[in-house]
Amino acid sequence: MQSHKTERFIFRTLKQLFFIARNRLSPRQFFMLSCVLVGILSALAAIVLKFFVHTIGVWVNHYATTYEQFYLFALFPVVGITLTVIYIKFGLKGNFKKGSAEIGYSIARKSAKLPVSQTYSHIITSALTVGFGGSVGLESPMVSTGSAIGSNYSSYFHLPYKDRTILLACGAAAGIAAAFNAPVAGVLFAIEVLLTDVTVGAFIPIIIAAATGALLSKIILAEGIILSFSLQAPFNYHNIHFYIILGLLAGLVSLFYARTLERTEKFFAARSNNRTKIILGGLALAVLLLFFPSLFGEGYQSIKMLANLKPLEVANGSIIYQYLQNDYTILMFIGALVLIKVLAVGLTLGSGGNGGNFGPSLFVGAYLGFAFARLINLTGIAQIPETNFTLVAMAGILSGIFYAPLCAIFLIAEITGGYDLIIPLMIVAALSLAIARNFEPLSMEGKKLSRLLNITADNRDQILLSKLNLQDLLEQNFSAIRPNDSLRLLVRVISISKRNTFPVVTREGELVGVVHLDHVREIIFNNKLYDTTFAKDLMTEAHAVDFNDSISVILKKFDETRQWNLPVVKDKQYLGFLSKARILTEYRAELMKTI
Image (cartoon, rainbow, N blue to C red; front, side):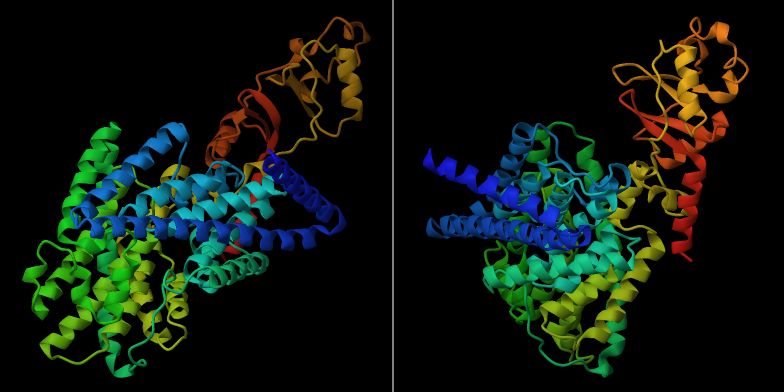
């Protein structure tokens, strides 16, 4: 009982301190303080997630090795996925969204508001999935958690849409920065993936949050948990043609990854029964793990093995290990994993697990780069540094899957502790992106977002319109009247109003019609009608638009009704009006940003 009182006292004190700070600081100062706080909270969430996964992984490894039940490695992911599905169904009542596309949708359609449950649900579900061996990454859940922290922090303090969007991105940047101790990569991920139309003013807040996240990660997380590498050799420009070939290969592999994952997701989406999904996906994943144990969990340890030139160790525990006793069979084993990893990811996600593609993209890149360099070395064409190619290919696949080349380049630069490989990183990341984009104009998450927003990659107008926020466009300086208000009262309202349109709203807030000044101009001076004519007799159809409609749909409604102002409702409740002129003005402003 005493502990509960102490907790309530601490929470109440912190709450009071926050509100005192907001009242004493200028809006700009409070916003900068908020960037630091969101960065701290998001980084702590990422660190907690890493800790949970590491702890579960240690327990799983200890249990399996102690009792010499190595086959349990193949079955543990089924347990994790099952627990994840149960938690989502009963703990979250099925209210759960995955992926950065959902974050982009909330920015475009929901005023950057994310549910409170997202601040913890991704930590629990991804910890269960990945901790027990699901073959996905933790970075996407970290981004979702950090974004939700930034969004809900902003809502709690009633910050405007622009600040809420930036703090959402701050949370995402801090999560990535904490995961890799890579603040620059965190900033660039937020800008390239979430805020595609970011202005210069948003850079500083995101940088502050990312730096905060990276600092906390460095202080708290052990070196063994963070992904870091040392270079085998400095960059040699004589190998430039090999890097060019690697970049082209990375683009093709990225394309294969994206299309294979999309097909796998469609396969599972066509099946509504969770039990069927778990059985199909879980057992198929278990079979893959028997042959390829490095698919277990994030796979970062196996990446370190390749970078340290210990390829045979990635096959430890495989039922075909005894057949991998020469360089060429090991090369075939590693090459197979380049193509099979995406299937393991699809099975994990499709059967109900939670995770992302960030980690798997690094996994595929590392295996591709090592296999390519080892093949060149074995054939005697040349002798090239396998570690360097392993690392550079990671940037290539990350760039080709997420269409985020700057994030990919600087992530590898940061986790290698320098910029010795910056030239090959730029070449491989750029070529990979060029190849992938030539076949697919949008990234995987970009395609999902375009479907959610109902826009196409080649429709520039729709893309620009989707960036407009409906909440910011709402005009609420219209004088509302009741259906039973008399003409006398209406004349009084008209005399003090600056608008020519008057919404007719019930006491419950429901919009039932509108009165236009042009339609009543002829009778407003007829005193005989003042007390016998009412608003309900004068109102016309409202032609209201729904708050959740896209701007494209709303513009069509303007054209159909030939109106310049239309009322907006949400669940039949009147919210305000939209002006066609203002929408077009904001559209032109967005258009100018692209010139």
